[in-house]
Image 1 (cartoon, helix red, strand yellow):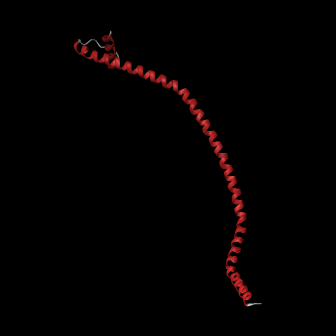
Image 2 (cartoon, rainbow, N blue to C red; image 1 turned 180 degrees about the horizontal axis):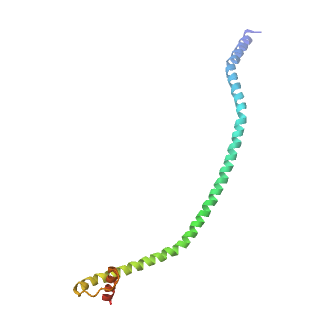
Image 3 (cartoon, one colour; image 1 turned 90 degrees about the vertical axis):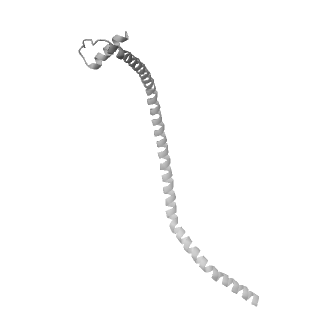
Length: 137
């Protein structure tokens, strides 16, 4: 063997010796990876099961929301005519209250000028209302 062959073999041996720590580290990592492989596969299975359960819950939630939406729409359909009736009654009551207030205002000066009439039985409010109705005629 020549000195060039010896030099190349020594260089190759040095490179192999330098690679040994990396080889040992890689071997430990691969051993740990093989050991954790079962846990990783089990985790993937658990993740798939959780995903399936979440999708099922999502479908149930969507169905419940649609049912609730339909029920609310039905209740609103029933409530709309009642709201309109109440609005009409409130408008009529306001008109009657305004008319009654006007009659009461007109009756107050006339009542102050008129001699006191005999009071019929009943509360003061009833007597005032009767007086206002008589004056409105």
